[in-house]
Image 1: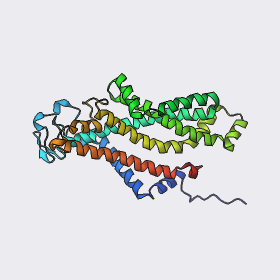
Image 2: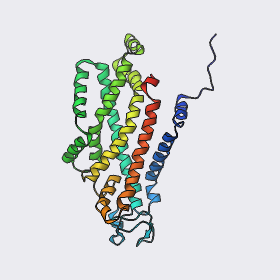
Image 3: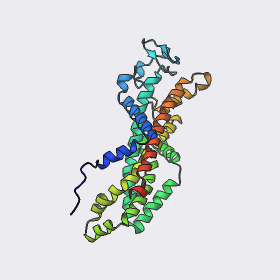
Image 4: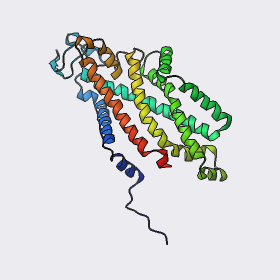
Length: 298
């Protein structure tokens, strides 16, 4: 007599969420990340100024200290930069750019790299050798160098920065996805799928891909954080976004030349926002690594 199913058992997603929140550090990271995302989404509502609109900037308000009142009559809580741009507004709008670039580049790189890695693991032979040597060649260069070369050819712009970061990061996903898919491809259910005559694409998308996702999710959180840092570095070096679309890296770069003159707020506050954003993603990624460790999942 078979036992009745346990209808009180929570769904898998709910169990995963329950396990995730058992880590206070991971919860702090998630709260910080969600808060920053909400700030970015509500930027037009919570900021007194649109830093993209050069017509609204007043040079008479340049270099105001935190808490001073500008010519428009509102308090600049975090001060202004040398162009009269409100630092708080620049931060919340910059979060939009940084998050958009990081999530966009990380997501596209994850799709491309995962597809390449799983296909290489499934086909094996010469196909796998060629693809993995291409991955090895890509990984032999620092990601920042690859991105710099791409932007030197393409020029500045949000779409070009995302494209450059995708080229710099897809190989990390390919390597991880291939390793996970190789483990799965040796399991009995894959052999059973072959014996039943299932097509290669059905095996890849129906079996290998879903079971390789946990490993990819872990590296995705880390690579999104890396993409945000890479974009900030590129913008700081003047190779990323135009000055009319200030990301956090661009805001930091604009204020860096004034930090020695005592105008710390132009760099420190955007730097704190960038640190919190990257730190939150790393805390989430570390918790995902603990929960989705292949030695526990498989």
